[in-house]
Length: 340
Ligand code: NAD
Ligand code: WQD
Image 1 (tube, rainbow, N blue to C red):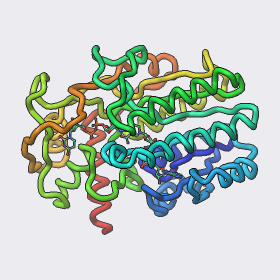
Image 2: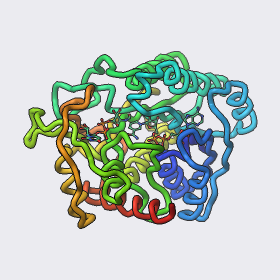
Image 3: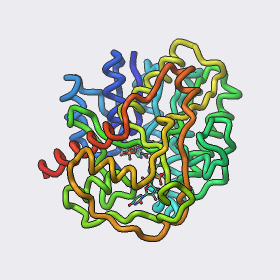
Image 4: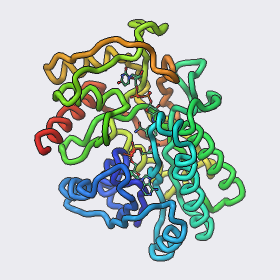
């Protein structure tokens, strides 16, 4: 069965391609390499011995999207990762984000509508909850006004899918709200490849660990948490990837209760920035050079998932610990640096 994975050479997409192959799906990847490398195809092939079909083009090119769906009329489902994801950049370039994250979404849904329906999985984010009032965060928690154009694209993206599903019963969709994905494939063949200075905590830590960055800045230690630093739910990217297969199977087997569903994907456990640093030091045996600096604007104090819905309904549960995920991130960083 053929599945389209947009953004399939990116961080989460590449790991999901591997898990889809593990389950016997035939995968077609579309990626414009705007935030990934063609070498990721070799990494995927090295793991499973199978190269996904690859089409390199920009999904903002609507005629190309139309041609693609004509050519691959037998696509049974779409997992849509392709998007721009840098929160700060989205503030500076909002139109770029609205075009890439929402324009492309509309083009794909238009093609699925033409088909009379299909199965669609959307990469959403815990960012839609903003600072939730209660921890852990359930899917019933209200969506808060977005802090950034990026966050807004995830909220509006969910609404676009929900509204489209309402009037197209043949279209079945699941929005997956990821918490903080980290780590790399245990094979050491694929992982996160941030371009430039990483904005996210874990790649910044591992790059500091290998000496590529001098020092990690910890953004604030005066938050109302136990050690004063912010709390997040860090989930191993392989666990996250497996959840996509579980969600897809729910749709393919018609087990969904409505044709638009939302799930949190996290571990259910919150970790502070200092706990993440300690985890890194534990698994790497290295001391991390860090200093406490002021708060980063827009950061929420804490966010961790109530995962019961995904556990029960998808039959999926995150298995890896923070140390497991951090170890894989560290091993990957060393592999990347030794090959550069
Ligand atoms: P990523 O940047 O590693 O992967 C995205 C891929 O999409 C890249 O390979 C990029 O080249 C491709 N792409 C982007 N725009 C494209 C276009 N117009 N046409 C074709 N290809 C295009 O990002 P990721 O971390 O793997 O995130 C995947 C998805 O998950 C994104 O939608 C992101 O917003 C969402 N998400 C990510 C996180 C996170 O922390 N990584 C958290 C929540 C949600
Ligand atoms: C985690 C914690 C920082 C870097 C972002 C997006 C969100 C989602 C995931 C896509 C925070 C602290 C970080 C550093 C630090 N992406 N930190 N020093 O902010 O939870 O979420 O990525 O949807 O939308 O906003 O993740 O990894 O940036 O930060 O102290 O150099 O680490 O303050 O507490 P965040 P993050």
